[in-house]
Length: 438
Image 1 (tube, rainbow, N blue to C red):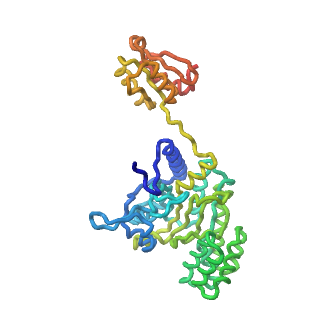
Image 2: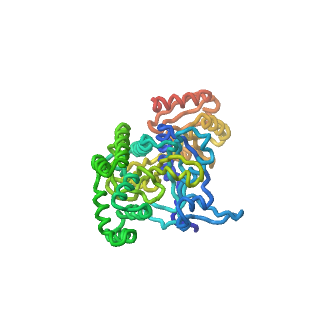
C-alpha cells in the first residue's frame, strides 16, 4: 500500500472543510481591507530564489532541471514571485498595490510539528507606500484575521520590532555596515540558543568583544515600551529621532485601528531574512508554545533587487496554515462541519427516473440532494436518509406520482407536509426561512 510522502498531508472531506474555513476567513477579512486576490505558478526559475536568498537556499528546495534544460523549483515562498509580477507591470498598476494570495508552498526540510514540506500560506502585501500607515494597515489586517477566527488578546500577541532602530543601536555600539548582517543574524537566533553560543557568534564578528557586545545587546532587548524606544533613539542623535517619530505614528495608528491591545513591543524580533528594512513582527501564542503563527515586515529594496530597475517600497506578512490550525484546534476553535445533504429523496423503483428529474430541479435551485443508487426498498431508503444527516426527506410513491404531489418529511421534528410538485422549490425555500415544518 502506498503512503503519502514525508511532510505532505492528505485532506479528507472533514479536514478539507476545516482548511477551507481558514481560507474563507482569509478572503473575507482581506476583502474588507480592500486587498485583491491574485495567483501565480507554483513552479518558478530556481535563480529567482537564489538571487533573493543566495545559493544556500537550494538545499531547502524541491528543484530539478526540466525538459527544456531550465533549472526550476517549487516555490518555498511567494515574495519573489510577487516582486517578479509587480516589476513586470509596475508602470501600469495604480498605487498603492494591495494584493493577497492563498496558495501551496514547498520546502525540502525535516518535517516537524507545525512545519511540513508542503504547506499553505496566506500572504498579504502592500506596495508603493512608505508611510507607517501602510505598516499599521497590514498589522491591523493580521489582528482582524485572528479575531475573526476567535482568537483574542489573551490568546496571541504580535511581537513588534524594527530593523532601522537596530541599525541605529548597533551603529551607536560601533558595529560597521559589514559586520551588521552577522550581528543581526546572531540576535535573531539568540532566543533559540544558549547565551554562550550567541557570544561565540558575536566573537567571530567582533573579536575579543563578543561578551561585551552580548551584554550591550541584551540591555537593548530589555526595552519593551514605546517611551523606552523613543528615549533611546532620541539619545543617539537627530537622524535617530526621526525614527522615534515613526514609532509614535505607528503605535497611534494601531490604537486607532483597535489593534494595539494585541501588540507587544519586543526588540528580540529582528527576523532572519536580510531583506527586511523597517518594522518587523511575528505573532505567537501568549503561552509561548509552538512556532510563530505569522510573520512579516517591510522590505523596501527587494523589488529592485529582483527586477534590476524597479524601485518600489513594500511590506507584507504571511500566515502558515499548519501552526494556525494547531493553535485553533487546541482552543476548540476549529468548527466541525456537518457533511450532509439538505434533501434526501425516497422513491419507488418505478419512479426513479421521475425522481431524478425532481432532484435535478432542486439542485439547480441550490439545494444539496442525495438519493439511493441501489434501487433499494422504501424501508432501507429511509434508513439511508437518516444516516445521511439530511434535514428533509422527499417521498415520492405511487400515490404522490398520480396526484402530481410530493411529501416533505422534516427529519428534525418528524412532521410531514404534502405539496404539489410544481410548488416544491417554493415550499422548500419557505421551509428554510421558517426553520422547518410547523
